[in-house]
Structures are given as structure tokens and as C-alpha cells.
Image 1 (cartoon, helix red, strand yellow):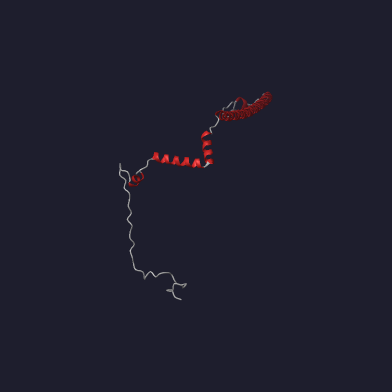
Image 2 (image 1 turned 120 degrees about the vertical axis):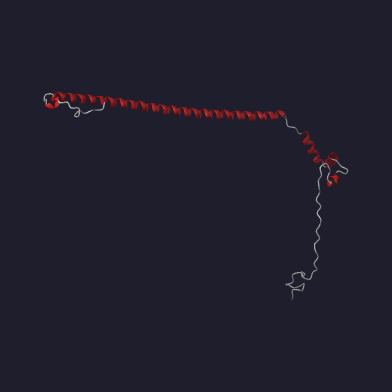
Length: 187
């Protein structure tokens, strides 16, 4: 078993060293050139004897022949040309959609009104609560002022009583009014 034997497992095909070198020939690629105002060569071949109108006519003839041969296709083509939607039915459907849309708009408007009413009620409740708190605070302040006035009156009465009792005992210090000994009170 050798690598040269065609039936051997070691055979890898023809030996590249035994082949004679032949350079590959480059195929010349032709690039089409397009010139303004000149019809390309390929288009000239296509336009040699046909036009678009002739192509359409040929296609229509073929379709007619196929339609005549097949009764099913003939019925489908006839149904497609005769089938036109009923305008009144279309109007009814359209009106139904509009009515449904109007109902939806009404429902949305009602929901918005309810939400606004709820918001207004909440605002009114908060305003009422603020007003109650303000009134309570005002009443507390008035009571505190009354208590303060009563305390001041009692304090003044006590001071007057002390002044009356202290007037019985006169000293030289009372006669000497030195500004350094006077106490200034805040009003």
C-alpha cells in the first residue's frame, strides 16, 4: 500500500508536482458604458419589436384565454367587478361608530365632572376644616389674652397694695431718686 496507489487509503489524488503548469486565462470583463441620449445596447435588443402597450395587450389576451378556460376564475373575475359595497350600509356602520364615540365622549365627560365635583368637595372640606381650626385658634388666643389681662390686674393690685404698705415706712433712700437705681421695664 502506497500513496501512489489509487485504491490505497493514503492516496490523496493527483500529484500536483507531476502536473504541467498552465496559467489561467483572464476573462475580459466588458463594462457597459451609458451615454446621455443614447439607448443602451441591451435596451435596443428589447425594443426591437415590442412596446409597453403591446406587452399589456398580450397579457390581457393571455388572461382572457385563461379565464375562458377556467369557469371558477371566470366567476371570481365577474364577482370582483360586480361587487360594490352598499353605500347606505356603509353610512349606517359609520353612524353607529359615531354614536358609540359620542356615547363614550358623554361617559368620559360625566366621569370628568364627577372627578371635578369630588375635587371641589374635597377642597370645600379642607376649607371648612381650616376655618374651624382658625376659629378655635382665635378663641384660644382670646381666652389667653383675658387670662393675661386678669393676671396683670391682679399683679397691679398687689403692687398697689405693696406701695400702700411700703408708704408707711419712709426712708432716705426713697427721697434720693438716682437714675442709676431705676429699673426700666419693657412695655
